[in-house]
Length: 401
Image (cartoon, rainbow, N blue to C red):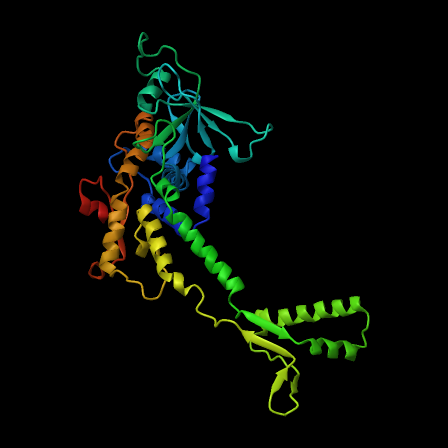
C-alpha cells in the first residue's frame, strides 16, 4: 500500500501536490521527440506511423510523473508476431506495479505484476509481465529474440514466443535494493509536513469557532418568572422546555454569522431610588476579535518554504508563498530559476531515453535519435516569449530556429 499512502499524503497538502506536478511538467519540457532529420523517407514514414499509433505526450508526461512520485517507471513494449519490430509502447502506472521476488541465484527481478492493488479482489486479474534485465534490457531483448548469442548457445537458439516485455526505468538511490525511496520521503519523516497541516487545521478551527466574539450571557431569575407568568405556564416540565427553547434562540442569535449587526432588545428594571438600572438579560463580550490566523502568517511561510525546499522547487515559481509583503524575484531571476530547474532534469531524461533508444535500434531506424528540448524563456529584446533549446543538437542555432 506504500504507493497509495504516498499519493494520499501528497493530495492532503496543496503545496506538495503543486510542487509534484510542477516537477513533472518541467521534466516533460517540450515533450519527447523522435528526430528524423537524417533519416530516409521510408524510415521517417515508419516513425510517423509509430508515433500516431502510440501518442507520445500522454506516455511521456505519465512516466515523468511516475519518476517524480516513486523514482521508478514501467514501460511495456509489444512486438509484432514475427518478433522483428516493436509496434506498441505503453506506460504502466507505477502505483499499480509490483516487483516479483528476485531470483535467488542471479538477484534479478524477472517479472512485473500489474493490478489494482488498492482494491484487489478475487475477481480481478493480476497481469504478469516479463521484465527485461534492468541492468541491460537491450542485451536481454536481443538474447530473448535470438539476435545475440548467450552463454552456451549461438544466436538464433531458444527464441522466446513472448512478444510483451516490461522495461524498468529506475532512478538510482543510495538505499534502494528493491523499491527506490523518493528523496521527498524526508518530508514525512521530519516535522514540517505535520506542522503545515496543523497550522491549516488551527486556522480552520479558529474561523469556525472563534470568528464571532466569545459571549457571556446572564439572565436573572425574574426574567424567567415574568416569561412564565406571561405565558401562564405552571407545569415544571413545560417551564423547562420553554427555558431550553429560549436559550437555543439566544444562542443562535448571538453566534450565527448571518445575524452580525442585529439588535437584541432586553427588558430592564429601575431600582427603588431611581438611580440604578438592573437589566434582566446581560450580554458581555469576553474578548475582542483579532485577525483570524494572522499570528501564524510567518509560520505558514516558513512551512511552505520547507516543503518547496524539499521538493527542489523555488516557491516563487509556483506562487505558493502566502502573504502580501513577501519578497519577490525579478523577471531575470525567475528566468534563471526556471532554466536551472530544467537543467536539473538531464539525469531523468538520460534514463528515460533508454527505452526509446532500444526501440530505434531494434526497429533499425537509422538516422533517428530521441531528444527532449526544453523551453527557454527569453528577454524582450529577442521579440519572443520562449524558444526551444536542445541539449543534443550539433548546431544549436539551426535547431533553435
